[in-house]
Length: 258
Length: 258
Image (cartoon, rainbow over all chains, first blue to last red; front, side, top):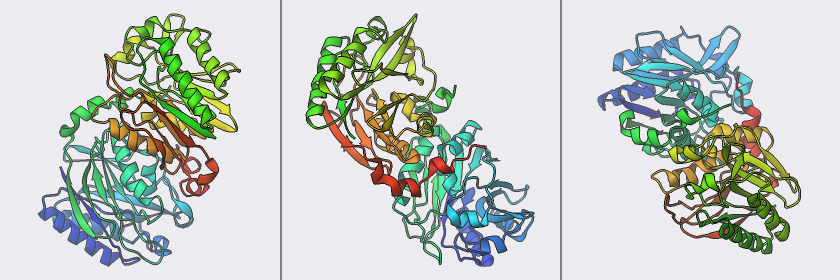
């Protein structure tokens, strides 16, 4: 399966502008043969939207989710993207999978990072959220979640072939280590694919580290964006190419917890 | 605390020769100010000893453990090293911590790799085995154990500042990835030090990948040997130098399992 990642420079608080960028990326990805587009964390609103993260949050039957589903239906590919989800009094930092037709599969970020996120969002439960698409099982995590090996393992044990990670990794002393070194190890230690879709550019709150990429089960990089470019990158997910690696590094088979 | 790692070319089945090499390394390390020496997996016997792994296995009160304790007492530093441990009918792939005086702390490898190991050894239980030394808490794992994030996490949650990993990583397509990329992530994701002490050279069964090294909590390399050199490398373990990294990457504080 061919997938596309949108490394995005979002407009904080402007849902229409962000949906337009996602729609443009979906059309670009579809032309290049992709069957799935992954956009970053809180892509519809911009990670740096500040109070907008709370004030513009919507339920699953709201306009942001409907807009993403409409883009999926129009472009003929599935979409994974982050959005701020209202549920009663609580707001979650969520991501959805939509094929444009079936009810979306929604994952709520379980590991919130820092005071900024914790001031707006409630954490979701740490659960394995999977969607099936074109014969592959896709798991979802959001940003800081993937830095905890337990969260990726939970998805791999549940049968994920592939983990999609909408993220908003800011520029920091450890950003390159997390993106370029930790993400490949998450793929290798579970013998799965990992796609890490980040923002780029800056807003009033953060500068983003880019380096969106796709890693194979052997830890190899299949595609990678630079720190600064806002663009769509493409990779092919072919689990059958990594049977030797899976056999030589049989972590899921050999793991003993007691 | 200053530590030393012996990247070793062991003589399969020749305990006296291997103890002599460890004694020489301990004297070298002590002259350079080290307070702890870490030797590889099954250092007393050679990982490639074949049936010797079973036939020369000894209990904790046997000559191999006594020899290592005597080297520690004579050189004035503590030693961590692997040895084949007999316990009734079972043989374990074990490592000990000895300061030369107190009873040794022994860890039994919980995750055996491949048919070679499984034909000689029983697995130990996956438990956190810690020793205290000069104000630091040291955890022990052996080779394949460290490739499972659960095993390192267990030690970190139990308070380890530092994990010592006697290993026998053979040359393979993934050896460099495991040593140079996975080990630094194990340190970073727990904000602890990791020391990975490997064999080098070859014997009748395996060629070894070397690359023994010490990694800091921020994922940085403090010391590293080449693939081929049999020698002692030195690094200083100073947890106080990494307080910023620990605060910015507070994985142990932020982890949520339910």
